[in-house]
Length: 222
Image 1 (cartoon, helix red, strand yellow):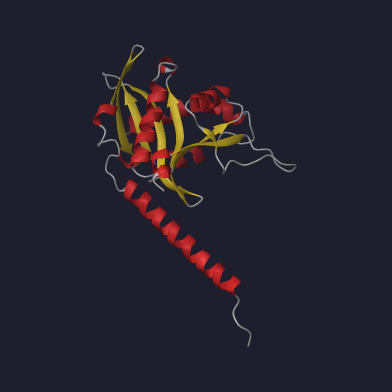
Image 2: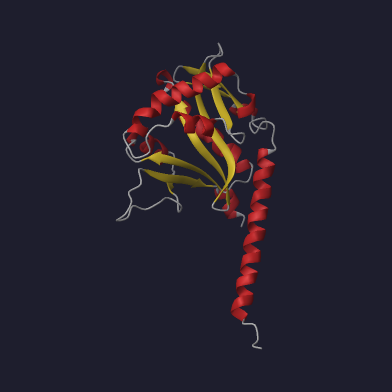
């Protein structure tokens, strides 16, 4: 009977190491998701006042969102994104989108004015993406009246603060290629093409790209 090769041993060790890395990453994500309010440690970032827009931010789990806010979220998303979805291979599927938005893992950063009127929201999650712990920004949607006034940029900075403080390795998001305003917005915030972004080939063209921003403090400590 032949001797076991060192190559087989190396493969088993590599698999074990990968399993341990994934388990450690999952533990970080689980800890982030166990927070009752990820924004609580940062009271100074609950308020925005610039360019004539005053807003108060709150972080809410999907299970705690009231019906009026849900209706506003659905309507704003549909108004802003349905034409873009329908103009590419994705198409608009209301049922699928509602299931995504109401997933039990979903978290929401919501901006309201002093009267309590909702102005903007971000749907995000702490999650594992290809085995890497990330804050994934699914949506950033603003009412037309508060766009280009700094609120969207501020909300992204708050997401980064919550994500990086929770030891997520990066903030990740998906952008449609035929949405130049969004592409320019995130590029200006120093988001760049992520290594997981799909590449067009002879058989398939993708209507989107995946962008990300790394947690530089976490990377510098490695």
